[in-house]
Length: 169
Image 1 (tube, one colour):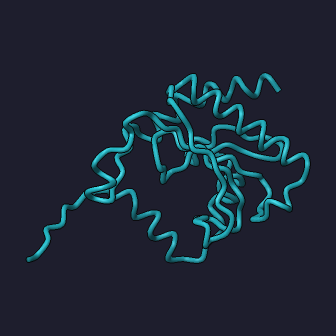
Image 2 (cartoon, helix red, strand yellow):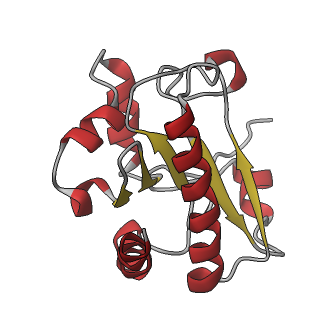
């Protein structure tokens, strides 16, 4: 018996697929070198770290906290980077709670390719907002995730809060 396959149209994923076909500069390093924060979805630039929206999110509001310096080692994080990374982690959770009101979070770091790090050479923290009922039949039946908000719309909602954060430092 032949099993039918449903197709979910997601053309924006091609950019991700193609980037894996080529050896290119780290996309996180490229983003921080660029000055076009809106294009790169950078919400905050600090002295040692930055906050960026994950353009291939696990869930709506998925952010990454990233050291400016390219390093894949948690042991290699300097004290000043450590302080700023954790400060931005706390501030980002507070902002996400205020703006999109999740009921929980998954927060983590994948160290090394075998541990699931998509960018094993550049350490980054993931903040994934969660809501009761945000898992549904789509991932189970079709191995697909539905994200309910555009990245641009999310950026426009979060950016003013991160702009205010800059004034507090």
